[in-house]
Length: 250
Image 1 (cartoon, rainbow, N blue to C red):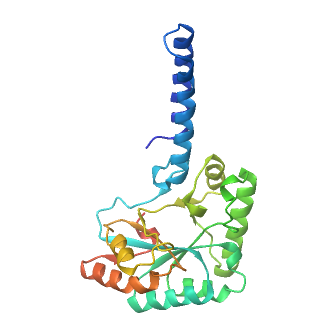
Image 2: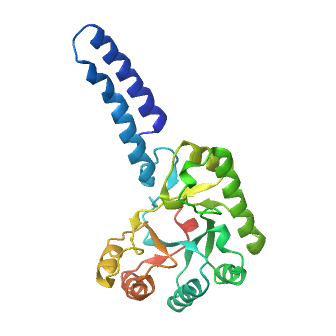
Image 3: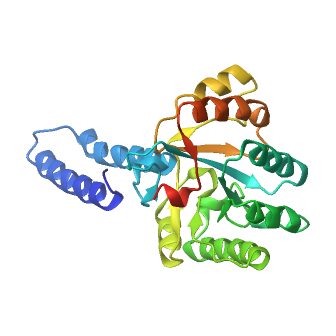
C-alpha cells in the first residue's frame, strides 16, 4: 500500500517539475494546482479507509490459511444491550473482541468484567469517541487514549494492547499517538453497517460476504445485530468456521 510520506514526496517532485515546465511555457498555470488537488484527495481517502494503511499500519485481516473469523463490537459497554449480546455469544459458544469507549465504563464495570469472564478480548476505542477526535493534536489524542486505557485496565486488571480509532479514521496525529503508546491498531475487512441497516436480510447478506481470516465490524447497539447473529453464526459454524478473538488471527 502507498504510504503518506511516499505520496507526499512524489507529489512534491511532480509539483517542482510542473513549475519548471510552466516557466518554460510548456503548460498552463492551472497545472500547478494538480499535485495539491491529488494530495488532498489522497489525504481524504487515506483517512477514511483504514484498510489502506495510509497513515497507520492496522491489522485488518489475517493472511493465515485457516477457517477462522473474528467478530468485533464497537462502542460499548451499553448496559442491557451489551449484556444481551454477551448472552447470545455465550449461547452460541463463540468468542469476540470488544472495543470499549472509556467514558461508557463508569456504571458498567460489571458488564466489562463479564466480557472478560466470558473469555472475550477487550481493546480501546478511545475515552471520548467525540466527533472531533480526528482533529485533536497528537498530545490530546494520546491523553484521550491513555485515559480510556486506564478506565479499562482499572476494571479488567489487564494491559490494553489493541486500539480501534473512532470511526476508523486515521491521520498523522493519530498514527503518532498510537505508535508512541505502543498499541496495535485494529481495523476490519468486513463492515456490516449494522448501525444504519434496518433490514435483517440485507444485514445478513453483508455478513455472508465473510471469508477466512476476516475481521467483522459490528456494534453493541446495532439495531438488527442481535437478530441476525444466530443465523450467521450457525451457517458459518456449519461451514467449518471458528469464531475467535483477534489475537488468534494475528
